[in-house]
Amino acid sequence: MEYWDVYDKNGKLTGKVVEKNGKFLEGEYHKAIEIWIVNDEGLLLVQQRSATVEFYPGYWGLTTGRIKAGETPKAGCVRELSEELGIEAEESDFIHIYHAIRETLPLIWDIFVLKWNGSIDDLSYNDSEVQDAKWMTPGELRGIIARKEIFIYPELEEILALIEQTYCAHAGI
Image (cartoon, rainbow, N blue to C red; front, side):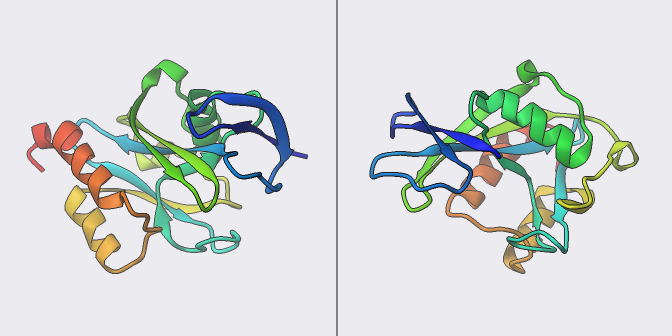
């Protein structure tokens, strides 16, 4: 059974642990991460969710996951990236760029960037989670957002603009 640490709204551990998908009291949260993978050409690695996953089957997205009890967000990034795409990275490779709170889930959402210059051929998918991946320009990503072919959340465009300015602009994309 998987367990999640419980945090307060300020991201401080409460010392409480709940079972995965367990109930949270008012003011209790758990953590999740999202990883934006960018190469030196300013392309973004986007993955397509498996047709058999419970939520958003077949949708495009970024590497995401819930943080397990006792795990730091960066350790969760290492684990999720390895599990979903077979990419091995170190905790120090991840750059934290965004923090959001989802009151209704209740979730603390930390977003990271990873610079990676590998090939699609270097990936090994966890077939139960991922069925495809491809490098996209920010414009191509905006196209799948416009067509609603990706999981859309309130800050998606803001984060894409931040990534584009900070990590893609130098590549002339």
